[in-house]
Length: 107
Length: 124
Image (cartoon, rainbow over all chains, first blue to last red):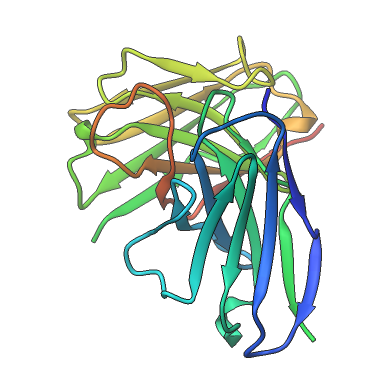
C-alpha cells in the first residue's frame, strides 16, 4: 500500500497568513494526488485534483504543486472560513490512501 | 441539485449485519463510478470500496474484504454497501462518494460529491 505522510498534523495561523501543507508519498504516484477540506461535523470537500487542478467553485487562493513524491497545498491568504482539517489522498492505485490530516486552527 | 443521501446506519452487535443505501439525484448516476469512504470517531478518512459505473469492476480495502459488498442499481439511482460480520473497528461515519469524472476510468479517482454520511456503531 502507498503511504501518505502529511505534515504538519496541526498548525496555528492568523487571517491573511500564507499557509502550506505538505504530503509525501511513499512511492511515485505521478500527479494522482487530491486535496480535501473538512469542517467539523461535515463531509469533506474536494479542493484540488490531479495535484494542481482547482476544483470548480473553489477559491483561487487554494493551489497545489508537486515535486517528485512531495505535494503541497497552499492557501495564499487564510480566510476565516478556511479553518478546518485538510487531507491529501492518492488515487494512483488501490487501496486509495489518505494522509493523516492537518488541522488549521486560529492563532 | 447534485446530491447523495445515505441511509441505513445504526447500532448493531458485533458479528451482525447492516445494509447501507445511497440515493443519488441531480446527475446521471449510471455514468459515474462510486465509492464508500468511512471515518471513525475523531479519526481520519479511510477508503472502503469502489464500483465502476457498469458495476463490473469492484475494489475493496483489505480491512473489509470478504465481509463488505458494494453494489449498485442504476435503474434506481442507488448505491449499496452490505456489511456482514461487523466488528467494533467498523464503527464510523460512512460516506457515499462520487468520482469526479463521468468517464469510466476503471479505478477510483478524486471524489467531488459526498453525502452527509450515516453513522454505524458496532457495540454489544
